[in-house]
Length: 329
Length: 300
Image (cartoon, rainbow over all chains, first blue to last red; front, top):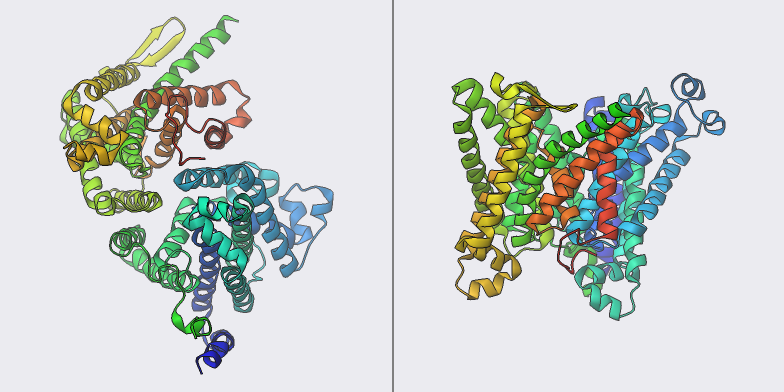
């Protein structure tokens, strides 16, 4: 009985989601739709950071850096050829290239992943908060490079007038893939290797886990989805500037993972929804009362309280029992 | 040739001024890390609070400069104690990364409280005329306030080293940094020692805020963030946990940053922050214990 129910719960949730997307697209206005899109993108970000941070315990603050790379690559690839020659000085092959959205998105993700590989190989020798500081350094370096590489990125102005290619179907699809891949990883031998490293590195090494390769993989997979999220983001806002990918964003994503319970996919998912909806509620409130910064203050306060009173987060690394009745039968 | 030399000398003086400020902030980072293994990102925001307090006392209240300096010192210490008591003490014993996230949260909270109450608008920061007077030595020129920055940084750091070496509280700090459990067994009041560490480190950060305002002439609620990060880099260069290391790291970073901007063609100067953080990553990888740090297992 339980077994049948847990088999059906995933398809049921997916179909509910499809229904939700269809209804939302036909009933809701543009503003609410864009908020739902943002929430979906935040879910992708939190669930993907959960692979890096939650499963493998790599405390990375570089997520927005990978997002920025994915976002810029996607934006440049989808930019109409005529406008490219007007604004940017690109090499010939790139200047004459205009790709459809999905291939561009995938290439953006792959570029982010490759960067993670390049950065990860030296930097992942570090542990704990030294890794956090190094990834934060990476984020700032990415920002400075984007600001100064004006011939390709237009510097601080950013690229604007991108086509609004992101819609709720694409966000939903990307979100599903992210959650699916992350779920598959968690319950595979690969995911168990990551969890083993997080719990006790020496013990994992003694059992023959290739620590370094697993850590790099966790960073690269997380970065790939961050890159995809960056591409979706750029084509939702229809503009991309280096300032969008700040340390505050990194902090917000980390908060989602920590509050959800590092390692719990359901936790990251739900925390991402709660926090991004809260931010969207606070924003008009801030503007109406002209008390800027109150949203961030509340976010920080909630985080501190959770760290003090429930340091393991909402779900403490586990998934709710409904999802794996099968395993416990 | 002579002009070239003068130019370099001027850059070195500028580097020393910047380095003094980095060193002052880096000491706090290093002491706090040394004692409870916490990278306290809220430390940079104490610099911001120090700067605004100086501005308020000098331009609104009109208090004389030495009194302002004392008040800022005391307020910095109080701020450090407050942060430690409310945010970090309840989390003691949790994994390192927990404290790190909490300190980011405190930092974001302080910055946004600053924006809320003081607005994000940068404010002009002026010292009285006698502090702004230019001094020329050879071809090198600097203001009175720059001289005061360097002298007071050196004397404060000297005092601190004496404090840590000679006083009972200093011994307790060193013992706690060495091994917190054994120190507790020896009858050291751990809570009080940690509080004192935060107080001393944050007092120096507060004064660094006064210096920052005097040096750059403009302050805003986000000013503490990047200098805070850079001072952390300075602490890492010197070897986190070591006070002389933090001082050396501060001067090394200040000098190399100014020389990077001053001696390379101007197009590179936009990359100065990237340069600082690339240095950080390199140091962490090549020399993880810094110049004077002791071996610590956690880093790499």
